[in-house]
Length: 497
Ligand code: 5GP
Ligand code: MG
Image 1 (cartoon, rainbow, N blue to C red):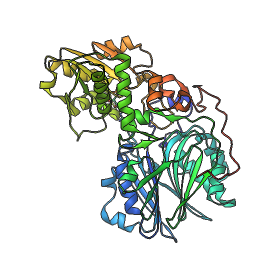
Image 2: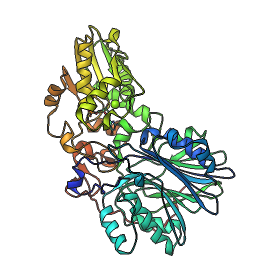
Image 3: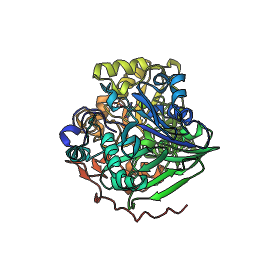
Image 4: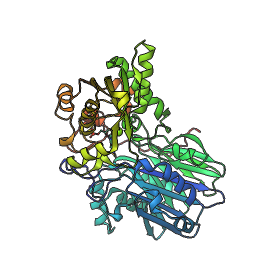
């Protein structure tokens, strides 16, 4: 969702340095025990998707209970808070940290009470027509307490629930909202999960001993000792039975072409999660191997920028050794795990200071060596620039930078905080110019085709907006890479499993 700073769809807003979010969502329905604790554990597993706020909403068959706080999951809840959340169904949310977003009104799950019940809503993604819909709903008398897009979805759902059940309401609302969304919704004691018709953000369904779970990533199912059933399909809604015995699937919208975010596999998701059929760790190793084959260089050592570059570097080293190269994998940088959030520091000075605080070279693996340094991505260029200098100071003979993604040339409008166009180092610089700025002996990025191959997808089924500048949804002022007509609703046909 987007915080209370507009919906980010219009170009003037989209190019300002306002928060844009990637989040984690959960939904649980159990046979005979409170859902709050499993939701809480699942949120822990999704903490990397959002550190700004955490919340849980449950329903005990009579009334809704909620607890939503700013901060990490462990800080937002104490034992008594979890205990107080009665009911065997629940949803949860973690929100991505954004500079200056200390506004509790945007924390989720979002809740509304209305004459036909209570609603809870968790959203990961970003709508491109939220402003339009907010104006329309406000005109119909809906009062808004934030200007985020999640509240727009909640009000639209509440209105559609007046003349139908939850599946009907979700289908109607899906016909009106445009953009990326994976949602978990709670209407009274029913939990539903839905993925937008292009499947931009991930969502999976899993089975527990005594119930079912929906989550942004499969790692959240693992921590509950559950089994991953499968990805929720683009345009599909999964309605969990209230008694935890099963779920109903409805393909609400037809899907011609998907727009899975490749950056989930490259950076955002946990390596131990399976998304759209591919284990993130395997995809990163594969991307590392492709990096060797496309632009490998046989230096003394190859080292990751921890932690995001690690699987790439190990895949790179293995591919190199398979080609009889002598380059060896080495850990050359130590990460201080207590320093977080370097990416979102408000000023360049603070970001540089934070990189220095976070990473320190391990001299013996660096001194006198030719080094290949691997990271998943370059956004502003702060990390690479700092690290090349650090490695040279530690005695590296040469530093070659390899990046496991194509150059990021344009902002993300669909849920990942990529900085603004002006801040993106690749927006107006060639790779040669970036190499010079970063101070590396050589620099190479990965091709878009290698990304598609590693994710086992065709390029047309991926959202590549940030690396091509062409988007799969209709963003005002931006180019598109496909026919962005709204997907059509289906006749509420049963899915085939
Ligand atoms: P740069 O320093 O070039 O601005 O950012 C690149 C570094 O930030 C990489 O190490 C990458 O792992 C990380 N990164 C890339 N995208 C994001 C993001 O959306 N949020 C955060 N926190 N880090 C990111
Ligand atoms: Mg990183």
